[in-house]
Image (cartoon, rainbow, N blue to C red; front, side):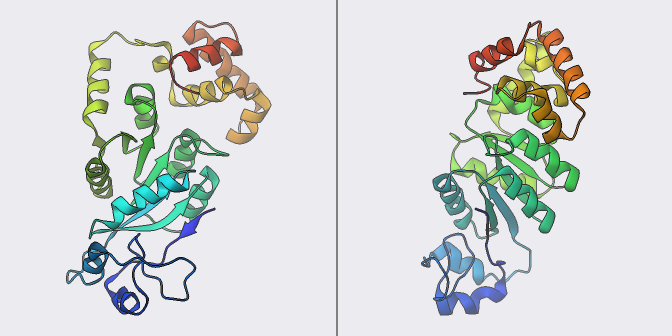
Length: 263
């Protein structure tokens, strides 16, 4: 279920004194549905004397405990606010359509639409939208293809909270954020011959369809989700098999599992 937090601003200080401050940095009074937690960082946030707008963050992850952790990281920063949360790809897209965010923290493994599909739609809806990918997969597996697809940064969930905060600020300023691991991956790919691994030779769309085929989806289902004809999907499938030198969908699935692209 998606969650939209009240807007964070200096004017919220009166509400904060009346009802406390939520850990995410957005105040709720005693009539709110969740208990309020007052933190020094949140108090400082509401009593800021500058007029610089806060960085509005949308957290998109299907695990409530993960969203809670990210929400706390943001709550500890005086210049950031969790403006909304989403548990699915469709919820994320709906929120991006409805309001503006400075940064979307997007998980790859999302229900109904994976992070790759969600990223593509977000960039169609709001090309300028900053998207920071958070993933449990190593950078070497997905980073390059997601950066090609328009992601503004890629972080492994094992990274330190300070790095997430740095990345959010960088993306909010319109920059790309490359962690040391991602930078090393990019450098390695520059040093290696083209297509060091078969899936790295795929285009953005080919990689997207490859992941769906490897996960067991059939062409008609993929065509419906991506708004393509079945014939077009079949053409992409043939290209993927040819480029990767594989024979069938079972080979694609085996390859994806062996290389840690799906579980």
